[in-house]
Amino acid sequence: MNAEKLLQYSMELSLLAQLLQSKQITETEYQRIKIKLMKEYHVLSDITAMTA
Image (cartoon, rainbow, N blue to C red):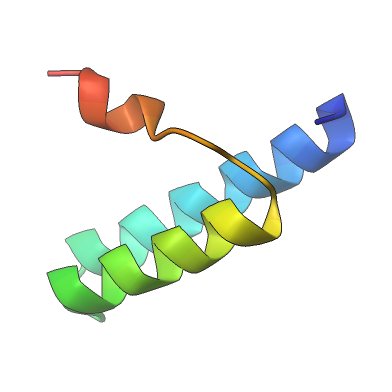
């Protein structure tokens, strides 16, 4: 993935997380959209799941 695509993916994921945090979407909706984004941007693993 080139830098521009990575930046776009990161921005979309950040906005998605903000929607979840502000309770505008549910955890289920968040997960579904995140999986869709990962497929769209060809992201194979979720590195955010590894952070604690």
